[in-house]
Image (cartoon, rainbow, N blue to C red):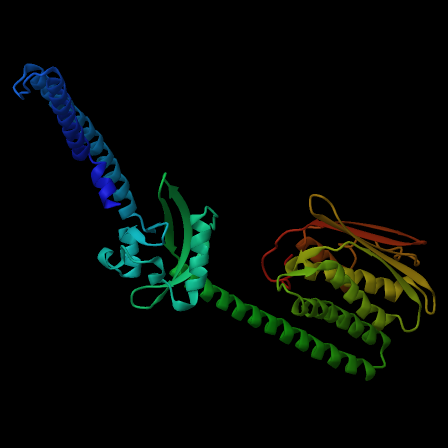
Length: 414
Protein backbone atom coordinates (compact mmCIF):
# COMPACT_ATOMS: atom_id res chain seq x y z
CA UNK A 1 0.00 0.00 0.00
CA UNK A 2 2.82 2.43 0.86
CA UNK A 3 4.66 1.54 -2.41
CA UNK A 4 1.49 2.26 -4.38
CA UNK A 5 1.10 5.62 -2.71
CA UNK A 6 4.74 6.50 -3.44
CA UNK A 7 4.43 5.52 -7.12
CA UNK A 8 1.30 7.66 -7.49
CA UNK A 9 2.89 10.77 -5.94
CA UNK A 10 3.50 13.86 -8.11
CA UNK A 11 7.31 13.59 -7.79
CA UNK A 12 7.34 9.93 -8.83
CA UNK A 13 5.10 10.53 -11.85
CA UNK A 14 7.17 13.51 -13.03
CA UNK A 15 10.44 11.61 -12.49
CA UNK A 16 9.15 8.53 -14.37
CA UNK A 17 7.99 10.76 -17.24
CA UNK A 18 11.39 12.48 -17.32
CA UNK A 19 13.36 9.21 -17.28
CA UNK A 20 11.11 7.59 -19.86
CA UNK A 21 11.46 10.64 -22.13
CA UNK A 22 15.25 10.75 -21.79
CA UNK A 23 15.63 7.04 -22.47
CA UNK A 24 13.25 7.20 -25.42
CA UNK A 25 14.97 10.16 -27.09
CA UNK A 26 18.52 8.97 -26.52
CA UNK A 27 17.76 5.40 -27.55
CA UNK A 28 15.77 6.34 -30.65
CA UNK A 29 18.44 8.85 -31.86
CA UNK A 30 21.22 6.36 -31.17
CA UNK A 31 19.48 3.69 -33.25
CA UNK A 32 18.79 6.19 -36.05
CA UNK A 33 22.44 7.30 -36.15
CA UNK A 34 23.64 3.72 -36.12
CA UNK A 35 21.35 2.72 -39.01
CA UNK A 36 22.38 5.72 -41.12
CA UNK A 37 26.07 5.28 -40.36
CA UNK A 38 26.26 8.60 -38.57
CA UNK A 39 28.02 9.42 -35.35
CA UNK A 40 25.72 9.71 -32.34
CA UNK A 41 26.33 12.70 -30.08
CA UNK A 42 24.31 14.05 -27.07
CA UNK A 43 25.25 17.53 -28.33
CA UNK A 44 23.17 17.05 -31.43
CA UNK A 45 20.71 19.91 -31.65
CA UNK A 46 17.76 17.58 -32.19
CA UNK A 47 18.68 15.51 -29.15
CA UNK A 48 19.08 18.62 -27.02
CA UNK A 49 15.69 19.94 -28.16
CA UNK A 50 14.04 16.66 -27.30
CA UNK A 51 15.65 16.47 -23.90
CA UNK A 52 14.70 20.08 -23.19
CA UNK A 53 11.11 19.46 -24.23
CA UNK A 54 10.81 16.39 -22.02
CA UNK A 55 12.37 18.25 -19.10
CA UNK A 56 9.89 21.13 -19.46
CA UNK A 57 6.98 18.73 -19.89
CA UNK A 58 7.96 16.77 -16.79
CA UNK A 59 8.30 20.01 -14.81
CA UNK A 60 4.85 21.20 -15.93
CA UNK A 61 3.33 17.82 -15.08
CA UNK A 62 5.01 17.91 -11.68
CA UNK A 63 3.71 21.42 -10.94
CA UNK A 64 0.15 20.51 -11.95
CA UNK A 65 0.17 17.29 -9.94
CA UNK A 66 1.78 19.07 -7.00
CA UNK A 67 -0.97 21.69 -6.99
CA UNK A 68 -3.60 18.95 -7.25
CA UNK A 69 -1.99 16.98 -4.43
CA UNK A 70 -1.87 20.13 -2.33
CA UNK A 71 -5.56 20.75 -2.95
CA UNK A 72 -6.39 17.14 -2.04
CA UNK A 73 -4.17 17.38 1.01
CA UNK A 74 -5.99 20.51 2.19
CA UNK A 75 -9.32 18.78 1.65
CA UNK A 76 -8.06 15.72 3.54
CA UNK A 77 -6.82 17.87 6.42
CA UNK A 78 -10.17 19.64 6.52
CA UNK A 79 -11.99 16.31 6.67
CA UNK A 80 -9.55 14.93 9.25
CA UNK A 81 -9.99 18.01 11.43
CA UNK A 82 -13.75 17.42 11.46
CA UNK A 83 -13.28 13.75 12.35
CA UNK A 84 -10.84 14.66 15.09
CA UNK A 85 -13.16 17.14 16.78
CA UNK A 86 -16.37 15.06 16.92
CA UNK A 87 -17.20 12.98 20.00
CA UNK A 88 -17.96 9.86 17.95
CA UNK A 89 -15.15 7.29 17.70
CA UNK A 90 -14.15 6.56 14.09
CA UNK A 91 -12.43 3.29 13.23
CA UNK A 92 -11.25 2.46 9.70
CA UNK A 93 -10.38 -1.18 8.86
CA UNK A 94 -9.18 -2.80 5.68
CA UNK A 95 -10.82 -5.87 4.18
CA UNK A 96 -8.53 -8.12 6.23
CA UNK A 97 -9.79 -6.62 9.49
CA UNK A 98 -6.63 -4.66 10.25
CA UNK A 99 -7.12 -1.22 11.78
CA UNK A 100 -5.95 1.44 9.32
CA UNK A 101 -6.72 4.60 11.29
CA UNK A 102 -8.62 5.99 14.27
CA UNK A 103 -9.60 9.47 15.43
CA UNK A 104 -9.04 11.31 18.71
CA UNK A 105 -12.43 10.29 20.09
CA UNK A 106 -11.44 6.64 19.70
CA UNK A 107 -8.20 7.29 21.60
CA UNK A 108 -10.06 9.13 24.38
CA UNK A 109 -12.79 6.49 24.72
CA UNK A 110 -10.71 3.33 24.55
CA UNK A 111 -7.40 4.56 26.01
CA UNK A 112 -5.21 3.15 23.20
CA UNK A 113 -2.68 5.37 21.46
CA UNK A 114 -2.58 5.31 17.66
CA UNK A 115 0.73 3.45 17.70
CA UNK A 116 -0.76 0.77 19.95
CA UNK A 117 -3.83 0.09 17.85
CA UNK A 118 -3.15 1.00 14.19
CA UNK A 119 -2.04 -2.06 12.22
CA UNK A 120 -3.55 -4.56 14.67
CA UNK A 121 -6.57 -6.75 14.01
CA UNK A 122 -9.89 -5.35 15.19
CA UNK A 123 -10.47 -8.41 17.41
CA UNK A 124 -7.88 -6.88 19.75
CA UNK A 125 -10.75 -4.77 21.02
CA UNK A 126 -13.04 -7.77 21.63
CA UNK A 127 -13.24 -10.22 24.47
CA UNK A 128 -12.75 -13.90 23.71
CA UNK A 129 -16.46 -14.49 24.13
CA UNK A 130 -17.35 -11.98 21.40
CA UNK A 131 -14.70 -12.94 18.82
CA UNK A 132 -17.12 -15.18 16.93
CA UNK A 133 -19.89 -12.62 16.76
CA UNK A 134 -17.42 -9.86 15.90
CA UNK A 135 -15.92 -11.78 12.95
CA UNK A 136 -19.39 -12.70 11.71
CA UNK A 137 -20.58 -9.10 11.84
CA UNK A 138 -17.37 -7.90 10.18
CA UNK A 139 -17.93 -10.23 7.21
CA UNK A 140 -21.53 -9.06 6.90
CA UNK A 141 -20.50 -5.41 7.00
CA UNK A 142 -17.57 -5.70 4.59
CA UNK A 143 -19.92 -7.44 2.13
CA UNK A 144 -22.33 -4.52 2.29
CA UNK A 145 -24.94 -5.73 4.79
CA UNK A 146 -26.05 -2.80 6.90
CA UNK A 147 -26.45 -3.17 10.68
CA UNK A 148 -27.68 0.29 11.69
CA UNK A 149 -27.60 1.28 15.35
CA UNK A 150 -26.10 -2.02 16.46
CA UNK A 151 -25.40 -2.04 20.20
CA UNK A 152 -22.09 -3.49 21.33
CA UNK A 153 -20.30 -3.70 24.65
CA UNK A 154 -16.51 -3.46 24.14
CA UNK A 155 -13.81 -3.29 26.80
CA UNK A 156 -11.36 -0.40 26.77
CA UNK A 157 -7.63 -0.80 27.34
CA UNK A 158 -8.11 -1.15 31.10
CA UNK A 159 -10.84 -3.78 30.70
CA UNK A 160 -13.73 -1.49 31.57
CA UNK A 161 -16.88 -2.34 29.52
CA UNK A 162 -18.16 0.46 27.29
CA UNK A 163 -21.61 0.45 25.67
CA UNK A 164 -21.47 1.62 22.06
CA UNK A 165 -23.94 2.38 19.30
CA UNK A 166 -22.31 1.22 16.06
CA UNK A 167 -22.97 2.40 12.49
CA UNK A 168 -20.95 1.43 9.44
CA UNK A 169 -20.13 2.33 5.85
CA UNK A 170 -18.07 0.47 3.25
CA UNK A 171 -15.59 2.47 1.14
CA UNK A 172 -14.64 0.49 -1.95
CA UNK A 173 -12.05 1.15 -4.66
CA UNK A 174 -10.95 -0.99 -7.61
CA UNK A 175 -8.71 -3.15 -5.48
CA UNK A 176 -9.36 -2.40 -1.81
CA UNK A 177 -12.27 -2.26 0.60
CA UNK A 178 -12.39 -0.28 3.80
CA UNK A 179 -14.95 -0.58 6.56
CA UNK A 180 -15.62 2.67 8.39
CA UNK A 181 -17.22 2.28 11.81
CA UNK A 182 -18.64 5.09 13.90
CA UNK A 183 -19.09 4.23 17.57
CA UNK A 184 -21.04 6.49 19.93
CA UNK A 185 -20.39 5.98 23.63
CA UNK A 186 -23.79 5.40 25.24
CA UNK A 187 -22.50 4.01 28.55
CA UNK A 188 -23.89 6.94 30.57
CA UNK A 189 -27.23 6.76 28.77
CA UNK A 190 -27.48 3.01 29.40
CA UNK A 191 -26.67 3.47 33.08
CA UNK A 192 -29.22 6.28 33.34
CA UNK A 193 -31.79 4.14 31.55
CA UNK A 194 -31.12 1.24 33.92
CA UNK A 195 -31.55 3.54 36.94
CA UNK A 196 -34.79 4.95 35.54
CA UNK A 197 -36.14 1.48 34.81
CA UNK A 198 -35.23 0.34 38.31
CA UNK A 199 -36.85 3.45 39.79
CA UNK A 200 -39.94 2.89 37.65
CA UNK A 201 -40.24 -0.71 38.86
CA UNK A 202 -39.93 0.46 42.47
CA UNK A 203 -42.63 3.09 41.95
CA UNK A 204 -44.93 0.60 40.23
CA UNK A 205 -44.48 -1.84 43.12
CA UNK A 206 -45.11 0.98 45.61
CA UNK A 207 -48.25 2.19 43.80
CA UNK A 208 -49.49 -1.36 43.44
CA UNK A 209 -49.00 -1.92 47.17
CA UNK A 210 -50.83 1.33 47.92
CA UNK A 211 -53.79 0.29 45.75
CA UNK A 212 -53.77 -3.13 47.40
CA UNK A 213 -53.74 -1.63 50.90
CA UNK A 214 -56.45 0.92 50.02
CA UNK A 215 -58.62 -1.87 48.63
CA UNK A 216 -58.10 -3.96 51.78
CA UNK A 217 -58.91 -1.01 54.04
CA UNK A 218 -62.08 -0.25 52.08
CA UNK A 219 -63.06 -3.90 52.34
CA UNK A 220 -62.56 -3.77 56.13
CA UNK A 221 -64.69 -0.62 56.43
CA UNK A 222 -67.38 -2.19 54.25
CA UNK A 223 -67.32 -5.35 56.38
CA UNK A 224 -67.67 -3.37 59.61
CA UNK A 225 -70.67 -1.51 58.19
CA UNK A 226 -72.26 -4.79 57.13
CA UNK A 227 -71.85 -6.11 60.69
CA UNK A 228 -73.52 -2.91 61.91
CA UNK A 229 -76.50 -3.61 59.62
CA UNK A 230 -77.13 -6.93 61.35
CA UNK A 231 -77.43 -5.17 64.74
CA UNK A 232 -79.83 -2.49 63.50
CA UNK A 233 -83.63 -2.73 63.47
CA UNK A 234 -84.30 0.69 61.95
CA UNK A 235 -85.07 0.15 58.21
CA UNK A 236 -84.07 3.71 57.22
CA UNK A 237 -80.76 3.42 59.02
CA UNK A 238 -80.14 0.07 57.35
CA UNK A 239 -80.87 1.64 53.95
CA UNK A 240 -78.40 4.44 54.62
CA UNK A 241 -75.74 1.96 55.73
CA UNK A 242 -76.29 -0.13 52.60
CA UNK A 243 -75.94 3.00 50.43
CA UNK A 244 -72.69 3.81 52.17
CA UNK A 245 -71.43 0.28 51.62
CA UNK A 246 -72.19 0.40 47.90
CA UNK A 247 -70.28 3.67 47.57
CA UNK A 248 -67.28 2.18 49.34
CA UNK A 249 -67.49 -0.97 47.24
CA UNK A 250 -67.64 1.13 44.05
CA UNK A 251 -64.30 2.74 44.90
CA UNK A 252 -62.90 -0.58 46.14
CA UNK A 253 -63.79 -2.40 42.91
CA UNK A 254 -61.86 0.21 40.92
CA UNK A 255 -58.77 -0.21 43.09
CA UNK A 256 -59.08 -3.97 42.75
CA UNK A 257 -59.14 -3.71 38.96
CA UNK A 258 -56.18 -1.34 39.00
CA UNK A 259 -54.25 -3.70 41.25
CA UNK A 260 -54.91 -6.58 38.84
CA UNK A 261 -54.15 -4.61 35.65
CA UNK A 262 -50.88 -3.57 33.99
CA UNK A 263 -51.62 0.13 34.47
CA UNK A 264 -52.04 2.05 37.69
CA UNK A 265 -53.54 5.18 36.08
CA UNK A 266 -55.80 3.75 33.37
CA UNK A 267 -58.61 1.25 33.82
CA UNK A 268 -61.14 -0.54 31.65
CA UNK A 269 -64.31 1.47 32.23
CA UNK A 270 -66.59 -1.32 30.99
CA UNK A 271 -64.97 -3.88 33.33
CA UNK A 272 -65.36 -1.46 36.26
CA UNK A 273 -69.06 -1.07 35.49
CA UNK A 274 -69.52 -4.84 35.32
CA UNK A 275 -67.78 -5.29 38.69
CA UNK A 276 -69.83 -2.47 40.20
CA UNK A 277 -73.13 -3.97 39.04
CA UNK A 278 -72.08 -7.39 40.30
CA UNK A 279 -71.66 -5.93 43.80
CA UNK A 280 -74.95 -4.03 43.62
CA UNK A 281 -76.83 -7.07 42.36
CA UNK A 282 -75.60 -9.23 45.23
CA UNK A 283 -76.53 -6.49 47.71
CA UNK A 284 -80.06 -5.63 46.51
CA UNK A 285 -81.29 -8.43 44.30
CA UNK A 286 -82.13 -10.90 47.09
CA UNK A 287 -85.87 -10.26 47.39
CA UNK A 288 -86.66 -9.20 43.83
CA UNK A 289 -85.70 -10.31 40.33
CA UNK A 290 -84.08 -7.42 38.48
CA UNK A 291 -82.39 -8.28 35.19
CA UNK A 292 -79.44 -6.29 33.93
CA UNK A 293 -78.98 -5.59 30.20
CA UNK A 294 -75.45 -4.37 29.52
CA UNK A 295 -74.23 -2.96 26.23
CA UNK A 296 -70.74 -1.72 27.09
CA UNK A 297 -68.07 -0.81 24.55
CA UNK A 298 -64.50 -1.70 25.61
CA UNK A 299 -63.20 1.69 26.75
CA UNK A 300 -60.10 2.67 28.72
CA UNK A 301 -60.40 5.69 30.99
CA UNK A 302 -58.20 7.67 33.36
CA UNK A 303 -58.78 6.72 37.01
CA UNK A 304 -59.49 10.36 37.94
CA UNK A 305 -62.48 10.27 35.60
CA UNK A 306 -63.31 6.63 36.25
CA UNK A 307 -63.91 6.97 40.00
CA UNK A 308 -66.49 9.81 39.84
CA UNK A 309 -68.16 8.24 36.77
CA UNK A 310 -68.52 4.88 38.57
CA UNK A 311 -69.89 6.64 41.65
CA UNK A 312 -72.51 8.34 39.48
CA UNK A 313 -73.52 4.95 38.07
CA UNK A 314 -73.58 3.51 41.59
CA UNK A 315 -75.96 6.22 42.83
CA UNK A 316 -78.34 5.97 39.85
CA UNK A 317 -78.49 2.16 39.81
CA UNK A 318 -78.78 2.01 43.63
CA UNK A 319 -81.68 4.45 43.48
CA UNK A 320 -83.37 2.29 40.84
CA UNK A 321 -82.86 -0.92 42.81
CA UNK A 322 -84.18 0.69 46.01
CA UNK A 323 -87.14 2.67 44.69
CA UNK A 324 -88.02 1.90 41.07
CA UNK A 325 -89.56 -1.52 41.68
CA UNK A 326 -92.00 -2.92 44.22
CA UNK A 327 -91.02 -5.88 46.39
CA UNK A 328 -90.83 -9.19 44.51
CA UNK A 329 -91.48 -7.31 41.26
CA UNK A 330 -89.54 -8.28 38.17
CA UNK A 331 -87.76 -5.48 36.37
CA UNK A 332 -85.08 -4.51 33.88
CA UNK A 333 -82.20 -2.07 34.14
CA UNK A 334 -80.29 -1.32 30.93
CA UNK A 335 -76.89 0.32 30.75
CA UNK A 336 -75.28 1.46 27.50
CA UNK A 337 -71.72 2.81 27.17
CA UNK A 338 -70.35 4.23 23.92
CA UNK A 339 -67.62 6.54 22.67
CA UNK A 340 -67.78 8.97 19.74
CA UNK A 341 -64.96 9.76 17.31
CA UNK A 342 -64.07 12.90 19.29
CA UNK A 343 -63.68 10.77 22.44
CA UNK A 344 -66.91 11.84 24.12
CA UNK A 345 -68.22 9.08 26.37
CA UNK A 346 -71.97 8.63 26.68
CA UNK A 347 -73.53 6.45 29.34
CA UNK A 348 -77.26 5.78 29.52
CA UNK A 349 -79.01 4.08 32.46
CA UNK A 350 -82.67 3.21 31.99
CA UNK A 351 -85.23 1.10 33.85
CA UNK A 352 -88.85 0.05 33.34
CA UNK A 353 -89.85 0.92 36.91
CA UNK A 354 -92.47 3.32 38.24
CA UNK A 355 -90.49 6.50 37.58
CA UNK A 356 -89.25 9.28 39.82
CA UNK A 357 -91.55 11.00 42.36
CA UNK A 358 -93.76 13.84 41.17
CA UNK A 359 -91.90 16.39 43.28
CA UNK A 360 -88.61 15.62 41.44
CA UNK A 361 -87.61 18.54 39.20
CA UNK A 362 -83.89 18.10 38.56
CA UNK A 363 -80.82 16.49 40.04
CA UNK A 364 -79.41 19.81 41.23
CA UNK A 365 -82.72 20.74 42.92
CA UNK A 366 -83.42 17.42 44.62
CA UNK A 367 -82.54 17.48 48.30
CA UNK A 368 -81.44 13.86 48.76
CA UNK A 369 -77.83 13.07 49.57
CA UNK A 370 -77.56 10.68 46.61
CA UNK A 371 -78.62 13.24 44.01
CA UNK A 372 -76.50 15.96 45.63
CA UNK A 373 -73.52 13.64 45.28
CA UNK A 374 -74.44 12.90 41.64
CA UNK A 375 -74.69 16.62 40.89
CA UNK A 376 -71.24 17.26 42.40
CA UNK A 377 -69.68 14.33 40.51
CA UNK A 378 -71.20 15.40 37.18
CA UNK A 379 -69.76 18.89 37.59
CA UNK A 380 -66.38 17.37 38.44
CA UNK A 381 -66.55 15.46 35.13
CA UNK A 382 -67.77 18.54 33.20
CA UNK A 383 -70.57 16.24 32.09
CA UNK A 384 -73.85 17.08 30.42
CA UNK A 385 -76.86 15.05 31.53
CA UNK A 386 -80.55 14.49 30.85
CA UNK A 387 -83.27 12.83 32.94
CA UNK A 388 -86.47 11.52 31.37
CA UNK A 389 -88.94 9.94 33.79
CA UNK A 390 -92.49 8.64 33.23
CA UNK A 391 -94.72 6.03 34.82
CA UNK A 392 -93.21 3.51 32.40
CA UNK A 393 -89.65 4.04 33.63
CA UNK A 394 -86.72 6.40 33.98
CA UNK A 395 -83.89 7.17 31.60
CA UNK A 396 -80.77 8.92 32.85
CA UNK A 397 -78.00 9.84 30.39
CA UNK A 398 -74.74 11.73 30.85
CA UNK A 399 -71.77 12.40 28.59
CA UNK A 400 -68.29 13.85 29.06
CA UNK A 401 -65.09 14.17 27.07
CA UNK A 402 -62.38 11.65 27.90
CA UNK A 403 -59.20 13.38 29.10
CA UNK A 404 -56.05 12.59 31.06
CA UNK A 405 -57.46 14.30 34.10
CA UNK A 406 -54.95 15.15 36.82
CA UNK A 407 -55.48 15.39 40.54
CA UNK A 408 -57.01 13.28 43.25
CA UNK A 409 -59.87 11.07 42.08
CA UNK A 410 -61.62 11.49 45.39
CA UNK A 411 -61.52 15.28 45.48
CA UNK A 412 -65.14 16.31 44.99
CA UNK A 413 -64.77 20.02 44.29
CA UNK A 414 -67.85 22.14 43.69
